[in-house]
Length: 246
Image (cartoon, rainbow, N blue to C red; front, side, top):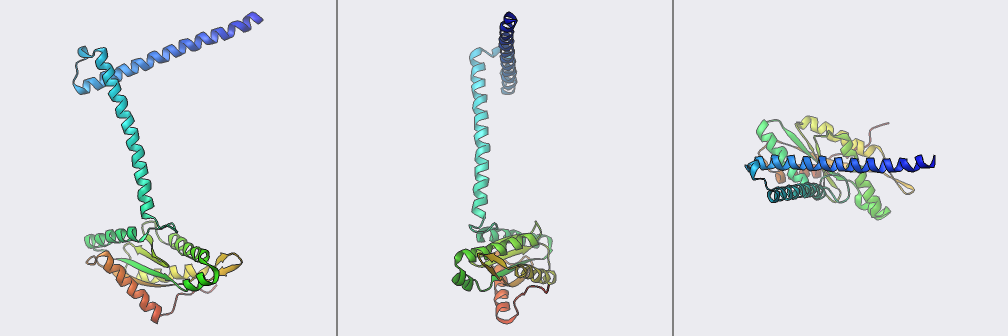
């Protein structure tokens, strides 16, 4: 029994050694085929594939593979940095620069295809009072609530951005003025519907909005300025959107 027990490992070691040799041979054969394939692409006759040339081709192939891997990694880092450059520092929406870029694209699409689209300008009411009464973390919670509500209530194709401070923008693709007005009211009501819990308090959040439907002849700055102007007119003259009756 002991002899058989001692023999078994030796057989296993021999088998593993043979397997390793076979795998090495397969790898060498595969590398040889790759070298031959690469050489044929390079126009080198097989008869001229000396060991030195084969080694040079294999070294070149390894370097190309390494550079390809580095390039893929660089692309991933660039995409990550681009996302960081586009995103607002506080809430998960576009920042002002990225929003204006997307608004420019939307205006170009309207000019090309003729379908109107709308930009809405939202201003959070009483942010100074919230910050003064409960501190800036409460104001941040209010801004996150507005951003998350807007994201949830618009289509994936629409754009949400923070324009600065307590102001947000929404681009509604292929939405005319009448539909945009109804959608703006609905968004404002959704924001006001649920108070924001903060410590032992519930913060009542409301917004004022203005909408501008563009036809493709404006630039992004002009379209946003018109929506901003409509928002201020609403703040001065019109009622603020309240939560819908329960």
